[in-house]
Each structure stands twice: as C-alpha cells, then as structure tokens.
Amino acid sequence: MGSRGFLPLLAYVLLRGLDATVLKGLQVFGALHPVRGENPISFCNLFFLAQLAVGLAALLPGRRTLRADLAALGPGDRRLLAGDAFLGLFLGPVAYYLALESLSVISQTLLFALVLPASALLARWVLAEALPRSFSISLVLIAAGLLLPAAATAMAAGRMDQSVGLAWALVGILAYGAASVSGRLIALRSWPLAVSVGVTNLVSALIFGVIALVLFGPHHFLLLQLWWVVGVIGLYALSLPLGRELALRLAYRHLPVAQVSLWSSLSLLVALLSAAVLLGESLQGPSLAGSALVLAGVFASRWRWPIRSGPTSVLLPTAPAPLPPWP
Image (cartoon, rainbow, N blue to C red):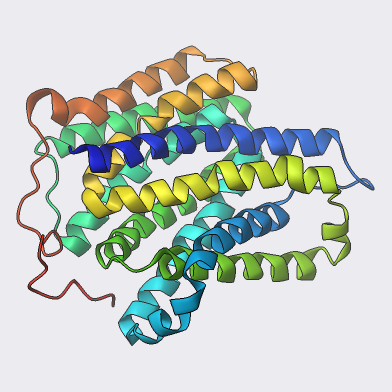
C-alpha cells in the first residue's frame, strides 16, 4: 500500500475512531445541561451545523467553476451524487446517532465494524473488486466478534431500547456499506471537491435544517447559545466530519473499497480506548473478546495472503474504458 493512500487512510482511522466517543460525549453533556428542559443537542442541529461546515469548506474554493462543473454531469452522475448523499450523509448518520442513544460507544463500535464485510461484499457485487482470499474466514471471525457480545449485552440488559439500538445499527451498517461503493465510484471520477463533497453536504445540511424546523420548531436552534455552536458543535464539525470526509475521499482515490474497509476497522481500537479513557466505559470480558475476534478477522488475510486486486471494471490507471455507470 503506497504512502499516497496510506496517510489519508491513517487519518481516517483516527478520526473515525474518535467520532462515536465525541458524539456520545455531546449527547451526555447536552442531557446534563438542558436548556428550557430540552437537550440542546439533537441529530438535526448537530448534523446541520457539521455538514454545513463541511459543505462550505469544500465548496468555497471551487465556487467559480461550480456551475460549469455541475452542468458537465450527466443524469447518471447526478443520480450517483444523490444516492451517495442520501446513504452516507442522511440515512447513515441518522441511524448512527439513534443507535448511539441506546447503545454504549463500545457496543455500537463493535456493531458498526460490520460495515467492513458489507462494504467488501457490495464492492464485489457492484464493482467486481477482488476480495481477500480468506474473506470467508474474516467474515466468520468478525461476525462472531461483533454479534455475540452485542447480543449478550442486549439480552442481559433486557431493555427495549437496546433492541431499538440494534435495529438502527443494522440500518446504518447497510447505508454506510452502500455509501462506500458510491463513494468509490465518485472518487474514481476525480470530480472537484466542490461537487463531490460541497454540494452534497450543503443539500443534506438544508434537509436536516428543514427537519429540525418541522419536528421541533424554530426555537430548537434558539436553544443553541454561542458557546455551544462555536466551542462544542463547531469544534466537532471542523475536527471530525470535515477531516474524516476529506481523508476518506483521498483514500478511495488510491485504494479499493475492500482494502479501505479492512484497514479502517482499526478505528475499533481507537474507539474502545477513547471510550474507556474519556467516557469511563468499562472494557468488560465480552467486549475485549469481541474486539480480539474482530481484529483477528481484519488481519486474517494479511497473515497468510496479501490482498490481491484482481481484474476489476473500475481500477484502470488510464481509464481507456468508461467507468461503471450508476443505475
């Protein structure tokens, strides 16, 4: 793996691992500091401000050529952008947030590591990208490491909110898995960031803003005091979603989906350690055992066989043939 792909992938691993811990911290902090009896942090205003910051940062440098860049997109390209935005910027984040409300950071992190096999399988089906030779072994180890501890925790808790969290986690896993494929297709087209990141994030931010107005009313944004916006939500938006989005796009330009998904599962370690250190979540036996199984599954193919990128319809250095169309 070349350094051009490794460095952004390493940054993505660190930022992705810290995301759940910081988000859970915001949820808890908001619950402990209600404004007018309400938690001032919701998925609406949080993702509205986060995606607004990401969208503006990506769009402003390329705003002069934005109209021409958008006009050059075909109908299939527009559907690809819309599908990627819906999966990765709306459905996935909403499911991620709602799952985190019912689950601990450790339980949720273990579950969302299933994005790895989901992404690889979808990339194989849609993009014809080669899978690691021992992918079936990796899949069994990862499934055992993720599902068994999470199911044991849910059954031991005996609460309905655990089941709700598991259901939202499943939705998020499928959404992010599909978004990894659409993100790979977008990265291979080398569109300007103003198009691939700026426009989609701004549109998604506006949708979250409208949802907040419909569900909560204008007062929901008035609950946010200046120090909340700048010091809490603004810091989260600029340090995590923006950096993670840019790092992931750069990684997809140089590496196939299966490889990005495989190595990005190392964010599991970052999430577990940060949750234990910053939030005081205990690393119990099932979580530690599940983590060990997940990591064993992640590196199963690396121990014996390298990941071989076989013939694929998208990995073409000079692109003499057209890229796969979006349905």
